Length: 615
Image 1 (tube, rainbow, N blue to C red):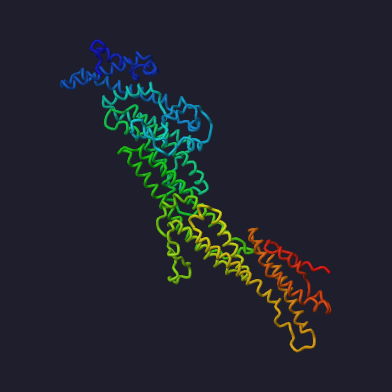
Image 2: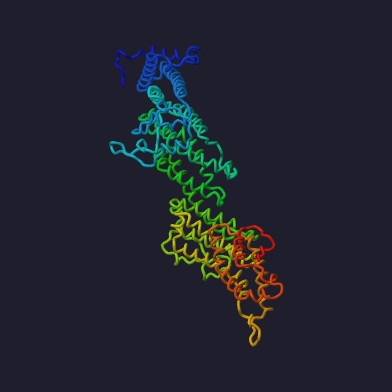
């Protein structure tokens, strides 16, 4: 607003005030700052600039090009150089990195307002996790007028980076610099100071200056830690740091010309924003491997969560590149997750180990795969959105012996993700069946399959999410395979042992004796003893790690073995005991066998001979 005529400073007085503060000509001017003086001095200097600018404008309009005009031009240049220094000094005086720890303190936070002030927050040394968890909700609110804006988003927390009196001074300086044609200089000074403050905040948040190449050369264990830190820091950067910088630009520059505030904002944060998102970009294009999936999903979810805030904070045309970069990274993370799942399936199918695991216990591959898909089920919501196509599977008509069959018609209504998880279980079993063939003992091969299928069933049952996706129909199919493997084991082991306890071949027809061939009977007892001792010695060293399964298998063995032996022993013991050296043939009582069965599947060697029966 034009000041009243009687309050205006004469031109020569105005020039004198400007030259008085020329830091190139006066030691005192170099050592003092105008805006650190009393308010009257500040107002006099600003009025002097206004008078010089009015004089310059009137000279330009009249077309005069006199010595006086040159003098005015020189004076305005001196004034602008001084204002630039003053502008920088005020910014520096109120520049410090954000206190990331202090956000967790609820003191001074007005829940009805999303604007925070440094002065209203007590410093409290707590974890950055708490900041993210406590203060970053996801819902957007509308203000009383119904206008939705980033200031009314409860996920964004703006900070008063500079106090209001300093903003008033900065705005006064900016108006005069821009009016005099010093917009570029004003933006450059502002950007250099504020970018330095943003860089300091980045260091506080643990965001390192790493190139995409640097990031890709790090070991995955190091990257896992950095990803966790990045997710926490990114929320603070977008929702506090960048949002507050945008607000400060608006407070100082809004209304001073076309998108001046936005130009200053991008001058400040474009470099840091690119630095921030380069980390996620490097992860999205890094070499794919199964262990990376879950951290990539964490990154994807975090970035997906931030996209609405990124779109609001970087809403202008000039910041479009930041929005595009974030959206492209999100897309690449999604593609990386899909690719890793596909490569994981291929790795499970082709896993090449051929050395049998000792004792037929659970194969490490089984544990790894089932724990892996259980974790995938924990990310069900995200993975269901990302996985939209069925797995590439074999067919019973394909004739490919290296790929198992899987018919989708039997699994109608399943999501693509559920089909992928079922397919992983199918190819795991297929691989395990191949590994079982490396056991020389058929019984051990069946026990191996029983242990591993049982583990698969238990992992599915133990995860609510996984069981829901797999479905009870397929779970029943798996349980059927478990029972079949247990049946196959029992047949392979015990049919030949129980065959020794048959009656056929013991009776002699037409004999005047008892009708039982003692020679054949002795051979039967000797064969049974030898077979059972061998099975006991061997299978005590085999392992069924699940206690319930181990007990159920022992009970099943006893239910077949003990009644058969008791019957055989009861009917024929007298024929042996009445002969010579009965102890050579009848070595074990029924109780001895019951005790011996308890040694089975414990995974350690037992003594060479069973405990002989007493009496």
